[in-house]
Length: 100
Image (cartoon, rainbow, N blue to C red; front, side):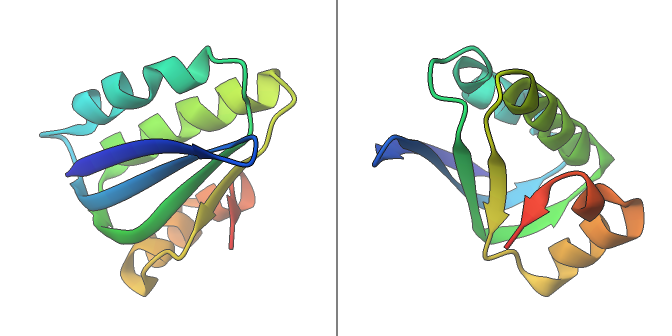
């Protein structure tokens, strides 16, 4: 898994590549922790390179959504691969987090 964080036009962009699973979910959480407390609550996660997420990865996305929501921001996951989108759909996370 690789996480790249950048800023564009008052929006934080997280580019995620690889698998988010039990072996690296805590690292993913550490990587995005500053975003959970930062001044800019609007976050876009580019999921085009993410090819898998486990329940541990879903937990991190939920934590990020709660943080963003509590600061009146917006979390958007974009360009999700079909097999990953299916996991979000089956678990109901696509009803909680905006996916485009």
